[in-house]
Amino acid sequence: MMRAWILPTLFVLCGAAVATGLILAGSYGTAAACLSVLLVLAGVNSPLAFPRPIGAREAQRRSAVDGRPVVFWRPGCKYCIRLRIRLGRDARRLHWVDIWRDPAAAAAVRAANGGNETVPTVVVAGRPHTNPHPSWVRGQLPPAM
Image (cartoon, rainbow, N blue to C red; front, side, top):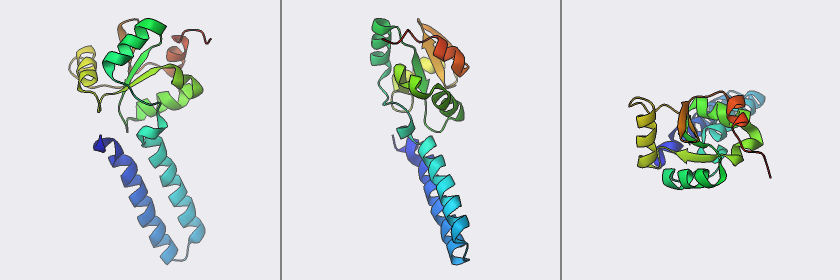
């Protein structure tokens, strides 16, 4: 679980260091801008930017009941971030599984991708799709109730 926070922590620490250096040099506006950008990057790369993850078994059970796709992802993955951002509010309608929290999920992703932990892997009706386009994923969602 801790490795999910490594990249966001590095963004915050680097932002603090850069901002401190700029403040000492008298560039207050530039310091604020750099710190703001790095804090946004930390937030986007943190697990907080994604819907609350569940385990692989629970996601598969829920998907069988409601027909929603299952997304296997990991923090810090730029393709997962792209998918999450491009889906917008529709992202909450998917079942998100963090492969760093669930060894069974990581094994499922490796099985679907020839031994590689390539994410995002989206499972729709039992069929895995590696790094699909966000509009395709949106099209796989059941109609909203």
